[in-house]
Each structure stands twice: as structure tokens, then as C-alpha cells.
Image 1 (tube, rainbow, N blue to C red):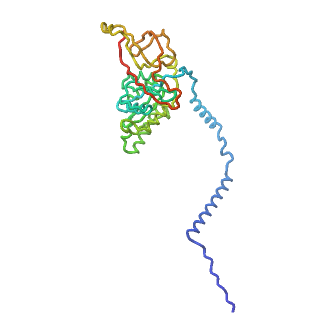
Image 2 (image 1 turned 180 degrees about the horizontal axis):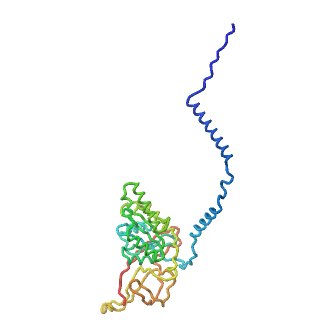
Length: 344
């Protein structure tokens, strides 16, 4: 009798390997179906102009934004070796103005100035000189420095916020042509929580943009090491100052003026001893800016009045630019502070 063989029934494979293969196969099929569906439903006008009115508005807005960046050509009236650019450090008391000037001088000159008094002129490049001046916390100093400042470093105490002196100086700048303004936030090390620190930074930045313009540069000085700020933060600030291009203001470039660095009384001491109210002969030293002086014009001294000018003479530059040097060495020239005098 013939024996029949019994075959075992087919068993479907199972397990993690088979499950993984099924998922891959399913995902490939889904991709193929979605690709075919997309090809069927693709709109050939997807990237074309939907509305002519909307396209016109977009084009006009783009042109308006581009036109805002245009400037009228301003004639450059400076000589081959321009005078130093005046950088004014302004802010309320106890915000770190003197410390910032001291740190910048140390970065540029590698010299330590314990107490900077009066204007300080340094060489920051092959053809660029900078004069740092600290603005006192009074209205007269603010008005005088707003007239001559090329760049304003506005110090803001992050732990306190904006103070009245900051808004006063901004209003004075608006009257005198509004030179370039850069903000510097100090006392950031007083915040222990990063979340609160970032919130304060964001709030002060948008408030600063409201007063100046959207996108105005704002630097952060996190804290102090010894008697100065962090070296890397001062380096970043000095780089922005060194490469900055200053646009000449129209009124300044069409009028002659001198920022006086030094004053000497040439009157005979015997005459002053006999009569303290005698007429004085005073010599002023400083860089001439704007157009050239004429011997016949009168000079206006703030707080004194209009006075006739006797003579104008050229003197050698006390802080000359380095010539024919591959590596520029920075120098520092400390000038005497201004003082009051009597004229009759």
C-alpha cells in the first residue's frame, strides 16, 4: 500500500526583523502614492504672480526700503591728515564711564592710565586718530560736547535702566545734527539668573532702538576683572570703533571751529598784578575742523561771547601718524584740561 507524505503547513515568519521589513515596505509605498498624488494635483501656477496689485505693492515697498539707504553726496572738506575723531562717553554717575575710557586706552596703547583727566588722543590705525572725552553730569557739558562729538558711547546701567540724563542728552543731540550713537550696557554681573538677564537685555535693547533707530548697536559689558572690563569685550568694542565710518554733518563741515585742548594766558604777570581786570591775551591750542579760518572773523567762545582773533598759526602735530611702518605702534598724548579765564 502506497504511503502518502504529509507536508507541514506554511508558517508566516514573525518577530522584530519581519516587522521592520513590513514597516519599510509600507513607508516606501506611501511615499510613492504621495508622489503620484502630488504630480496629479500640482498647480503649474504655483510659483507665478497671484495678484498684480499685491505684486505692485511688494515692488514699491522694496524700492522704498532701498531708497531709504541712499544718501546725498557730501563733499569731503578735510585735509589729507584729518583731525582726530571725537568720541564722547556719556552717562549718569557711577555707571562706568571712567572705567570704559581706561580700558579702551589700555587696549589701544598698552599703557595704564589710572585717572584720565581731560581729552586723551590716541592713534588707532595707520590714518586714524581718536580723542576720548568724558561728559560731566551737567547740562552745559552735554551741550558743548554734543556740538563736537563724532561718536557717542552711551553708558546705561542695566541694573537700573534708562535715567533722565540719557534722555536729556539724546534731545540735545537731535538739535545738533545727531551724530552716531552706540549703547553700552554695564553692571550685568549683578544679575544671578540668566533668564532674568536675557529678559532685561531684550527690554533695554528695544527701548534703545525706540530712542535711536531700529538695529542700533548695543554692547554688553558683563563684568570687571581688576580695574577694567573683560579684554574680549573691550576688543570687540574697539574693533567697531576702529572700522566705523563717520558721515560728516553739514553744519560742521561748512563752519570753522576748534575743540580747544590747551589754553595759555600770555598776558604780562605784572599787568595782571597791578590790575586784575586788565585786558588779557589768551592763546588756544587745538585741531582746526570744518573749513579754514579767516584772520578777520570773530571767534565765539561759549559762556564768554564773540571776540576778535589776532593771529592764526600752524603748529606741528603733537600726536603724528606713524609713517612707513609695517606695524603701527599706538601712542598716547595726555592734554591739559580746560579751565576758566577772565576776558575784558
